[in-house]
Length: 330
Image (cartoon, rainbow, N blue to C red):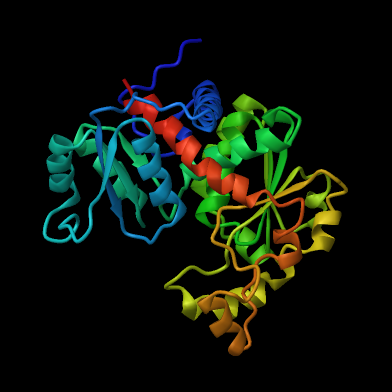
């Protein structure tokens, strides 16, 4: 099957077939090998993309900028703009679509990135919203393929913690599309709050691909896991929720004991980063002084041989490059 993604936006993995996702993963591995060999790319020569970030970023911004530069293009970070302020998203999209060849959006609302795609007339790439994080999942799948010697359809991923967050949903989408086994493991209180529309969409796709998707508070789901995945419990701006989150999620902190409960010596630990795994950050220090341990993973796990988080972080750039080249490249 020939795959052609030219001109397509990348808003969610649910918009893509398993064959198209497979194509992007293969292209990511290919482009990574190309960069490692020192070969310069030209597929984005003459292309200019605009980056709109409502949220702070380390990996995502760096990855998009380097991906463009590596293939001969330019990425411009649009700061202090009128987007969504004095100018509507629709009008902004129509302007930016006249000036740029593509738009990167990292922010809060999924509707914003969808509106940018609808009105700009150029490819738009979702670099994170409160509902989804599709570029992260591509990087995660690349990392899994580098470290786990089995096809994705045989891999079991367990997301531990706040099962309602964007990473949990993004993993549901990715696993459903690729026929994988996935368990969202967290407190029953949070399991009962998982978005029903998300679950309905995922169940329909899973029925077609053979994926197994579950949301559970039963620790038995850890057995046989190939990947243990987690995310921070509270982001910047959510400090008021920390006491409640710590009380609710401390039993779901990733520990060496939890890793052993998978009964898989080759299990790997992944995290989208940044991570609170010690007390060397300003936020972790401030919170522990108030009596709140916000670590979602123990330092011993984060630094262990099972942890592949920095390979994963690097793969953000290679997988993002694959998305841009596939949808905008010459």
